[in-house]
Amino acid sequence: MRMRVIILDSAERDLKDLKSCIVKNFSLEVWRDTYAKLKESIRHLQNVPFSGGVPDEIEKFNLHQFRQVVSELNRIIYEVRQDKIYVHMIVDVRRDMTSLLTRRLLRDF
Image (tube, rainbow, N blue to C red):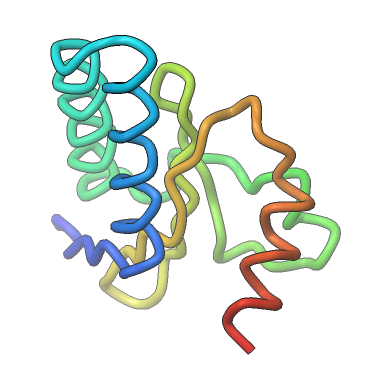
């Protein structure tokens, strides 16, 4: 059964930021390649939503519904809830995830 994927506004903002950074530092062609691979990784989740592991930074909070897959140098943080997959974040693997999660939580409150 294919699950429905919902890309949340936070992940959409991440994509815009990622695009700006990649185009500025590399090229539009590199962005297109990166974006295609991200879409492929997300499509794969529709069929095997539990293929990603629980991120270390989230596991300590016992939130096992949150998972991640890595697409090249990007982490896709998503949540599996009933028959839907919610993509929360798309971030560079080199970013400090603990700081990023803290800022995200503070911004949302």
